[in-house]
Amino acid sequence: MSGKLIVLSGPGGVGKSTIVAELKKLPNFFFSVSATTRPPRNSEVDGVAYKFVSEQQFDRMIKEKKFLEWANFAGARYGTPSEPVDLALKANLNVLLEIEIDGARQVRKLRPDAKLVFLQPPDIQALEQRIRGRATESEARIKARLELAQEEMAASNEFDEVITNHHVDEVVRALVALAAR
Figure 1 (cartoon, helix red, strand yellow):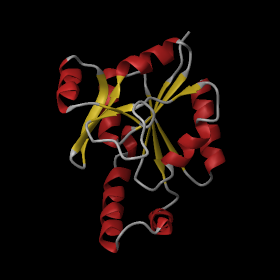
Figure 2: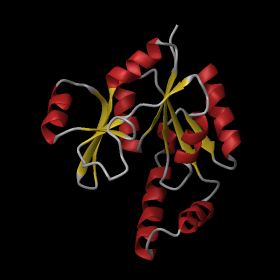
Figure 3: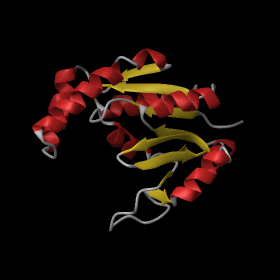
């Protein structure tokens, strides 16, 4: 018997990180640590938030097919190493990957048994409220994020499940139920 591989995607600001924080409280879920080429921030510890690697190491990992998915983002590369995921699945843990839509597409090609879950807001106004509520971004950045969110939501039909984030506890229950199937 082995665990389930669940990929959680959705537009920025929809609440994926909040959902993951709740799932991390449960014993039968594993969360992979992404590799990245960006330098660590002051408070970051290697192997905790990210595994920090050089450009050369990242290139070698790509060549050796050590990633389930990887992407360029904001001048750095990020990827999900496959080995820890495989070990967790063999240990009968459910693995949840919180990744962007293109990464979910890559996982689908390598692991057709993965369950792809799209987390969507109740509506675009709710998403805008969440993004504005953070009070961390300029008006131009908010508009750009909302435009990108519209594009991302159009891809929801590529996913096995679409869950609307009305309440965190409902989403968590739905993901736990999906892992139990």
